[in-house]
Structures are given as structure tokens and as C-alpha cells.
Image (cartoon, rainbow, N blue to C red; front, side, top):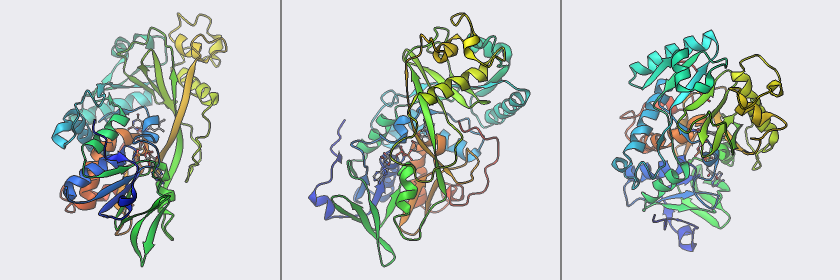
Length: 431
Ligand SMILES: Cc1cc2nc3c(=O)[nH]c(=O)nc-3n(C[C@H](O)[C@H](O)[C@H](O)COP(=O)(O)OP(=O)(O)OC[C@H]3O[C@@H](n4cnc5c(N)ncnc54)[C@H](O)[C@@H]3O)c2cc1C
């Protein structure tokens, strides 16, 4: 790959005036850079500032990199269909990679239903999604057990299979957007410190090496977005950041096969998929919102591992046990894998925990739409991608370019991505 435009800024770069500066090189920043360059033309000068040594190093790389089209909210659902189109035919959108190079792999979601209420919800949702053309269906107990025989004996009574699910490599995708935008500069190792205002208008972004001059800024800095907005006197945005963790276990019970779906246990909020020789799972604590997360991620420790495994275990618990150590034969029990990982004498106990902050609108229901709008005539916002930022990024760049630089309402329904969108209807399924 040609990466000449992913580099540290040089003296000359501080002399030019950019038409647009984007702050943040996660998933969203490079995507908006790519589609904005197409909108503004190859002669316009776009710079992206990323504080890390490479693109795609923020929350995106900490995520599970899963995606799907089966969203109850129609706007989010349509956005994910657009994402899927881009990932399946990247060259139609100017990307110079194949789906294989993006790591695009089918990985359906199975939403495990353990209560009557969940069964009704997923039956209803599968019906709605099917009508929208999404390959989702409700599986009764027998079909669910056929799909995942290791569910036999657990509390699961059926569930929804969403075959639109996939996984991707977020770093490759971020770099593919940059590579396909050779006229834009992606300045790494360049933290934005402050948005500089003079006479009420943006004149540039301060970095440790100087001011990158511009009259238009789009902030796509994930959890740091609010802090950057607040470098301007009197400005703020209503978002909160919450910690979310992932857990990689090096081993797994052979009953869990490579081709098994991404399984979600909604009653506890735990989810996982087979990954390499082990499993990759995730789970988020319900904690009070953190508005401006510190650099340091709280709790990259074993406490989370135990919480995750307990959540999986409790979600599938066949016998109503309260202590996984009560299971005697961990290898024959359907929950052996979890119990083994959790237990004090665990043969499968090794694994790593990491995570990041995901960003919500304040007081939003969980699968509400992201924010993509001009906060002021010069400062655009691209954030609040919640648990769907990686999967949403390709479409977000396309929509964002339209919202920021297109003809109003020609292609994207702007009001859904504004500061106060109409309420999203439907069942919240953000996990
Ligand atoms: C554990 C976990 C699991 C998740 N699982 C999924 C999943 O399976 N699928 C999915 O779609 N989403 C998932 N998400 C959500 C997803 O990761 C986010 O929505 C997405 O990464 C947001 O992308 P972003 O570009 O807005 O933010 P980020 O990826 O965080 O990018 C922001 C970038 O801005 C940079 N930056 C910050 N401050 C500055 C500054 N001052 N100057 C310059 N650069 C700056 C950062 O270094 C970073 O690179 C998950 C999140 C977590 C935490």
C-alpha cells in the first residue's frame, strides 16, 4: 500500500491554508476525509490530525469489529445497509482494496432468547427486518440447537439469527480510506490541542508543532470530541462516554466451532464469537456516564474477566446454579467452557482484557443515531457512534460528506443526525 500521505507534518504543512481539517483518525475520520475529498474535488486541501502513531488506533481497534444490518431503528438499519454495500463493493466507492483485504468475513449474529418476553421481541423483530429485506429469522428451540448444539441444556429457548452479520479489520479499513484519498494529508503523531477562534470564526487548530490553518474543522475524535469542542469558549455537546471491555480467551471448549455465530445473551449483555483458537467476547458495565474520559482506561484488569464470564455463565445457566464451581465435570457440561474459564482451577483461564470508551448522546436510548452536523458554521461534529461506529463508519463518511458539503436533504435525512433528532422508534438492541 502507498502510505505517503500518512505521515508527520513538515514545516510547509503549517504554511498552507486547508479547506478542511478533520480531527481524529479512528474509523470515522478517514472515512469522512475520503468522501469529503470526493465532494469538494481533488484540488481542495484536506488534512486529518491523529494523535497516535498510526490511523485506526483508538476505540475502533479495541472493538469487536462486528457489524450487521439488523437494527430496529430504520435510520441506523439503512445506514448499515449502505455500509454493507461499500464493504462488499469497495471499488465502486473509490477504495483500492477488495472485500478480502478488508478482512470482510460473514459472521451472523444469534440473539439468544431465554424468556417469553425475549422470544416475542425477536419474533417481532425478525418479522420487521425480513420485511426490510434483511436476512433475519426467528429460530425455535430445535433450530437454535441445530445451529449451536452446545446450547442444549442451557436456559436458551430460541432466538433471532441475523445473517447480515459480518466482521472486518478496522485498521485496514481506516488505512484503505486514507490510501484511496491521496490528495488529503493524514498527519499522525499530531494531537490537536485547541481550536483557534478569531473574531468569532475558526482560523486553525493548534498542535505542538504549530497551527494548522483552516476555516472549517470537523471533529471526529471519538471520546475526545467533547473535550475538543470545549476548547472553544461557550461551546459544548451533549455526549457521554462509557467504558466497554473486550476479553480474548486463548482457549475454548471444542464444542464451540469456528463457524459458530456471534452469540449475544441479551439478559446479561454478554457476547462473543470464536476467534482464532479461542473466543473474543465483550460486555459493558452500566456505570455513570463519563463525560471526558481520561487517557487511561480504568479497569484493564481481571475484575472484568470475571464479570464477563459470570455474565455469560448466568445468561446460559441451565440449572440455576449460583456458583460455576458447582459444576463438577467441566468438560461434559455444556457450560464447561465458561465454568472452566471462570473457575479457580481453570484450565482455560488465560486471556487478555482490554477496551475503550464508546460514545452516546446524553439521555439517548441506546441505539439512537450518531451526531453528524454543523455545531457552528465552521465546526462540524461526527460522534456518538455508540456500539456501531466501526460498522457504521463507511456509510457515516458518505452521509457526513453529504450533510456537510452536499445539497441539503438531497440524499440523507439530515434531521436524524442533528443535535435533537426525532426519537428513534423500536426496540433497543445496541450491544
Ligand atoms: C469494547 C468495545 C467493543 C465494540 N464493539 C464494536 C463492534 O463490534 N462493532 C462496532 O461497529 N462498534 C463497536 N464498538 C464501538 C466502536 O468502537 C466505536 O463506535 C468507534 O470506534 C468509533 O469510531 P471513532 O472514529 O468515532 O472513534 P475512535 O476510533 O476512538 O477514533 C478517534 C480518534 O481520534 C484520535 N484523537 C483523540 N483526540 C485527539 C486529538 N486531540 N488530536 C488528534 N487526534 C485525536 C484518537 O487517537 C482516535 O484515533 C465497540 C467499542 C468498544 C469500546
